[in-house]
Length: 464
Image (tube, rainbow, N blue to C red; front, top):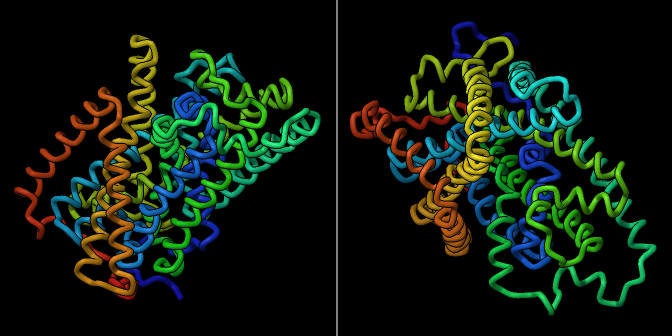
């Protein structure tokens, strides 16, 4: 049946549960712990796998809150909608603005990282040429439609998973030829000589960052078949799969490297160094290339989610509706938002390189940590929204659900307050600009001027 030409153009429902899981894994990256492996190892005195598992349990509380709220409000606005509906329109806008920071910085940082990595492979092209190529590629793939993006993500996920399998096989081969004592295989979880609770806690505060991105699944609620079931399942499963896969990767790495600290100059390339010890130069280069592929997938996925978040905020009149709430009728994508995010990633990556060259890389690090500033604001907001929803509409195990949401809020709040000072300053400036704009646009955050509509075919469901 053809679509009524008089009806508004909507996002197209074409994603199944598997598509959601793959997109979520791609945004987080199957290789997520590889980049921060050295940092966690040094902080936790080698207990990387333990911190990854503790972080997974902590993030599951927030993942459940996201999934439950998506059942109540299956909207592309995600945390922006949840907080605005359950608490206050002004708070919803603040959370949404914090998410915008997260979702705009992610493709920007991925564009810059991919350009740097590509220069090592094809040194003839400059950094600025590469950022044009990657920003254009990310934008083109997202303009092709949600199904095309999902299929490409599946191919990238398969390729990265294959590399992980190759790495694990190389580790198994290396371990097979070692002489090891009976406690060799349990030492990555617990080594009495170096285990300290404070060190584990410090490592966990970093390990949690390897899960940042699972929330993007909820921004696709209006493009999912049976969203009330699939968003909850996908959000929780993405968290669990990412945690289990990360744990296996770092467990294998610890079998090879042990608890020895990495030198200051080797922290960022720590996992590649482990790969070289396990499989030689070929595996070392393969892991480096895989990290490039991982950031390509993450950049595409982040731009995909950013376009949907801006669409939800535009439809709710928090941003200019005519531009941000427009849907391209042929492919059913928020074309204006996708192009805008791509342009900002290009300009931002160029600016990041300019300032990083003058600050000795400090600007890049600030940008990466500032990304978590917005993400953790959204996490706290969703946990608070689910707590309030249960308080008003107690269903089933209400007290247990409220306790989980409260714990998720506390964990995210602790991590947020412990971000680096420069990142915190950048984040506060961003929030001040957004709040000022929102106050002017909504005449003091009057709720009737900032709406949080759920599509007509998806009325709120209280049976959660």
